[in-house]
Length: 183
Image (cartoon, rainbow, N blue to C red; front, side, top):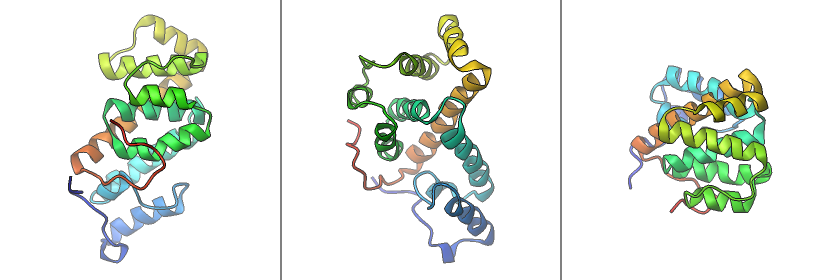
């Protein structure tokens, strides 16, 4: 598979692209990689996406562990190898078990999840597969995370779906990673 929208050397970028790229480089990501490689072709879109992603990934109301779980569910739903390669080791670092990760990779509902993990998993699966959340799941998420957390969880699913679409369409190259590729 050929990377359709590969890296542009910084010196070859337009002024607007350089500003957008530098904002990503200067932020918590520290480099231009993954979805930002194809997105740099639209610097204003990339800048807006980067700001949203910085909030959702690093400061969401549901915390990093559950955010990373939601990202993995989304990556698996979209068979997005780059998202998986980037976030699988991060999810593990923040406490998502090897068993949960392996089940997600195999498209199975993981056994042995903590209650909050099961809730995030089910919320994400319903949203991706049924395009809605049933009343019981919504009520449980609201009780666990509050309105702010529920909206952030919706945002995480939407944002990482957007990135998955971009990278799937652009055939973004998978970075070197300790994560096993998705089957």
